Amino acid sequence: MASERTLSIIKPDATRRNLTGRINALFEEKGLRIIAQKRLQLTQAQAEAFYAVHRERPFFAGLVSFMISGPVVAQVLEGEGAVGRNREIMGATDPKKADQGTIRAQFAENIEANSVHGSDSAENAASEIAFFFSGLEVVG
Ligand code: GDP
Image (tube, rainbow, N blue to C red):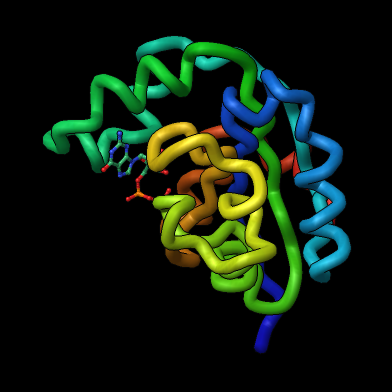
């Protein structure tokens, strides 16, 4: 499988609990390389734009207010099949359904405050990486 890049976000529930380093260690132990990373406070408009695909969903307003409730860490992960690999490392959206050892099984508080975001396709990864990073900031 070819080397790929994916966009990851460590969400406010995890930065609040000082889990950035533990989550990053899991990515690195499981073969993904962090090739760009920055901590930022999203604005409401930025969070709405990032999650625009979910704008009709009943949880949209709650998701946006959660995502702006504290700092996030946006990052680009690189490795073999990075999009799918990261989805495996993250675990299911609902931590009650996430496999043991996944980030969400270990750290998520609930289905909304679930510690991490990861792109769900290579195509979405490219646009989500461009949302947060310029080409100069991604050093593979
Ligand atoms: P993901 O790809 O596993 O992050 O899941 P989705 O793309 O379906 O949803 C995006 C984010 O919206 C999730 O990571 C959760 O933070 C939130 N979310 C998804 N489903 C629900 C839900 O049923 N209720 C609430 N409150 N939040 C949800």
